[in-house]
Amino acid sequence: MNHIGTNSIETIRLILRRFRPEDAYDMYNNWASDKDTLKFVSWGPHTDINVTYRRILSWVESYKQPNIYYWAIYLKSDKQVIGSISVEISNDRDESCEIGYCIGRKYWGREIVLEALRAVMHYLFYEVGYRKIIAKYDVLNKASGRVMQKAGMEYERTLYNLGHRRDGSIYDADVYVKYLDEIKP
Image 1 (tube, rainbow, N blue to C red):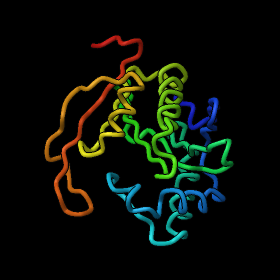
Image 2 (cartoon, rainbow, N blue to C red; image 1 turned 30 degrees about the vertical axis):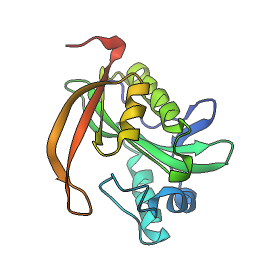
Image 3 (cartoon, rainbow, N blue to C red; image 1 turned 90 degrees about the horizontal axis):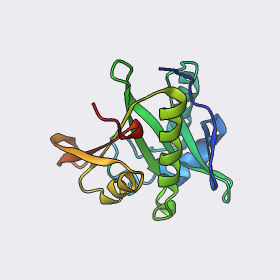
Image 4 (cartoon, rainbow, N blue to C red; image 1 turned 180 degrees about the vertical axis):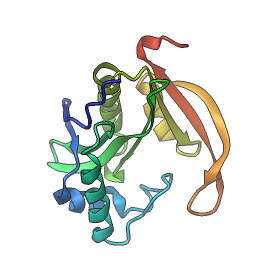
């Protein structure tokens, strides 16, 4: 593994970069305070911008570690941060990682997350050296699954009774994977 940290990645519409403290306003307004956007994630919504600011400060501090990959999704046309994409779990022994992402509701349906996911997967495979990338989604969040499929990931399995949603209901998650050059063990 060649852990090089969260370096900027530019695509046609996006700049994927490290979070900065001044991103708190965008993050809070575009997704961190929106209960509908966060319906299928384990955290939030943030009750005020100070919660968002503290979260960003913790990420900024974590960038000192070369094995941290946490990008702000900056939309060039809107000149603001509209979401995040990150490595949530990393396993150097089997050269695998799990990716998670979140984007503001206003930006859904425009294939922005797909563009970010493809760019990050390329970075993680060819710059860092992961051989397997995993992503999972609450089975009720079909749009997230479609993003994984469009990015070339394949269904691996369903995890049943994985945890509780914030409303107390139990959820299952579908797991998708992509292998470097589709070389499977």
